[in-house]
Amino acid sequence: MAISYKKSLGQNFLKDNFYLERIINSSEIQNSNNVIEIGPGDGALTTHILERTQNLVAYEIDKGLIALLSKRFEKKNANFINKDFLEVDLSEINDSSLIIMGNLPYNISSQIILNILEANIEYEHCIFLIQKELAQRFCPKTKSSKISIIAEFFCDFEILFDIPPEAFYPEPKVTSSLVKIRKHSRFNDRKESFIALKRILSLCFANPRKKISNPLKNIFNIMPRFSFDMNSRPEELVIQDYFEILSKYEEQI
Image (cartoon, rainbow, N blue to C red; front, side, top):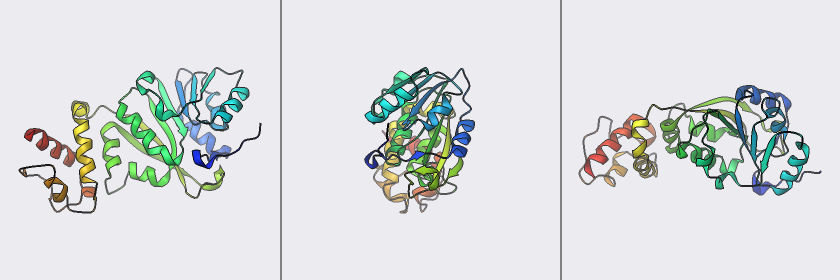
């Protein structure tokens, strides 16, 4: 069956077997693991997954590819579901032995990752191929971002290695990065305050290069004292600074 690539779905299929093997080795899949693959595409990565485990559920939005995948892997214990992963009820996939992985469409990568993190479900780890620029926003070396603070709140986010455009077909215009996400419990005592924290982050990062004092004026009726420099920019603060803002906010409501 011929494959027609749909630009509207952000389809760039990884073809280079060298990188496919690096991804599968990084996934650390054991036979006992349950695996969810997001966007299996033409099944290149799926083939490697099914060499490690027979417990695979894959979500693919493209009906044509579902037919191809079902035929190609009909003798395998794989369940291919024609559904947008953004519409999946994540509470139904709560599983501490679960590995979630996939070559994510660039246009919805951040939304998929944030949905998984904010659902606060149980999983072993996630392995995602995303745009390098987005990976660096989630895991910045210096300046913070709204999504980097959210990621740090829920998980340890690691950039493993880059993959060049020529490893894909059709070739994207950008470099991709493989990332690993491991859930942690360091801030479990603050989970009930996440909605308030997220609201604070949205206000602060609306203008990330302006002084933090500007958005704080919109948060507090009476400005408290803070341990950080009020002339700092939101991108210069770290998660503990935002916890301090959160605590002061909760004292005033």
